[in-house]
Length: 139
Image 1 (cartoon, rainbow, N blue to C red):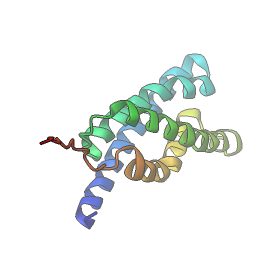
Image 2 (spheres, rainbow, N blue to C red; image 1 turned 135 degrees about the horizontal axis):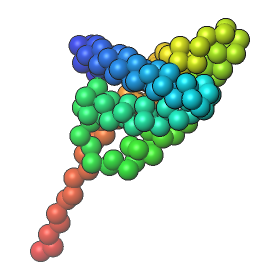
Image 3 (tube, one colour; image 1 turned 60 degrees about the vertical axis):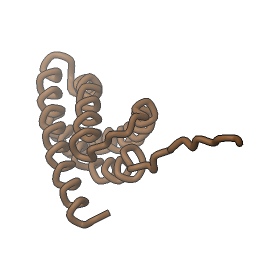
């Protein structure tokens, strides 16, 4: 991959990450006021993940592949892996460091960003060679 293309992807990934992190933190703040901070973290996670998938697929990686169901499956596996990392950071920041739930959610989000980029770049939205059909004629 060209260095300029990688730089643009990293920049876009950062913008997407900050945008999703802001929305995730905002939802944590909003939901945490009435449901508690751990429940808010869990409820805010799915809409943040959906936004993250869409922005990264179409804007960061410009992925035009048609195998969306495969991408969603791979993305959800990545989300499961990064959720464990992210929840670990949330728990540490909230329980051990005493940060408010919304702020701990932001710290946790930043903690898993590098892992997410690598998995999406190399697997989920990787460019795959196109499969072409070959027409054979029998004489």
